[in-house]
Image (cartoon, rainbow, N blue to C red; front, side, top):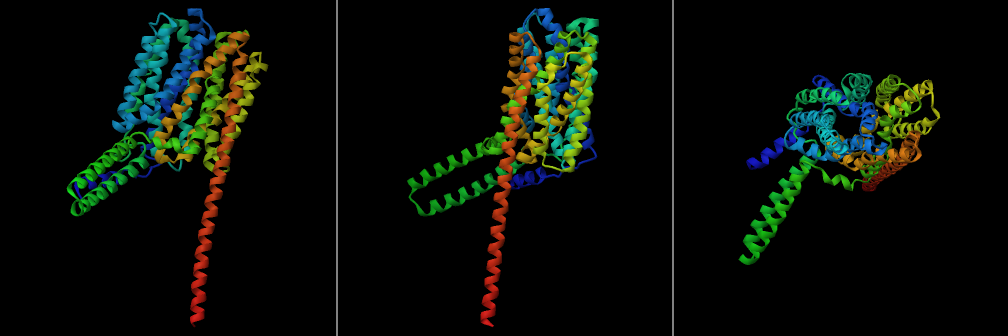
Length: 491
């Protein structure tokens, strides 16, 4: 076997390293915790900026909501790029680069003269940086945890809740003290901590690629094809005419080059996921869920202000929601780890409940009623977010989680992009922020239908597998029985 073949085999052995579920894995969890807080936590707390920017530029609810929606959509669209860059370079380098982009985007946004400039800076550039930080960090967390993965995902995502709880009143204080522009400058400095999070991402035993299964398969196919092609060519050279030999040789070379190209692509992006029916169904759930995920957090503070709630009380609603969100993530992540029911069933129940809670939001008009709504909304939202990545890992397998997460975010981007503006459109038409919550609730209930379909497909797949296994056992039993009968006849 030549040196290239031995190198490929060594890469395959290294890529199969087991998850430690402890030790340095806790530092990876800490990094992911902070990344969640400084990305999606900031997005949820941005509702405080929404009110001030809406007033300053005297624009519509739809126009202002595009800032958040562009950031969310960019996170989703760039996620596959972040996965590929992590495979090509390293998770650490990509996250550090993303942290710098986030900081620059927000700082540039502080000097914006119109909404378009905010779209490009706080929306696109900041969202691009979020994608480069969030996707590789979550992928690395999946490498370091296996047995405790549901709890690890829940604990890491709780960073979004804790920093939302802290940042929402902090942003309001900074805006009152330094205006929204000064607050954005301070936020830009705060987001430099994402670079520190990137420095914590130590590779797991030199595992390079997030799609380990794809790399192994690609490397093995490459080895097989190269060896077969060489044997075939030697045989052709010994038995065929020279002209025919050259023609076959060229065809074999073309096939080998094409196969090597496909294998090289698979090292970075596992595009075969689009042929996985369960994955595509789960991605459609993601599209409709994203329509309802981000609008409520953006419009909760404006909705409270429209009901006459004073600004610090309105900001406190997001903090209350964040506290219950934290409890929901940790508790229901622990419940998922007990495996009492299938994780997809648990996710379906929480999504339906979350949609129902959002439909009831317009009934809350006083501060006490809004406190109750914020608490219940945060609890159920946390229960939903705690396990949706765990379900994705179960659908595709942890070996393909890196590429799956990238493609899932890409497909879900349309929901993240259109959710807040669609809600803003209904708000502008009806002059009532409550209609935005109604839209979000309907979208989430529709998304639950795709989870039900996924559950049915999983049950049918299990039934087919069990039937095939029973048939195989029966065939073995019949074969053994036939041999015993022959031995008795011979006796």
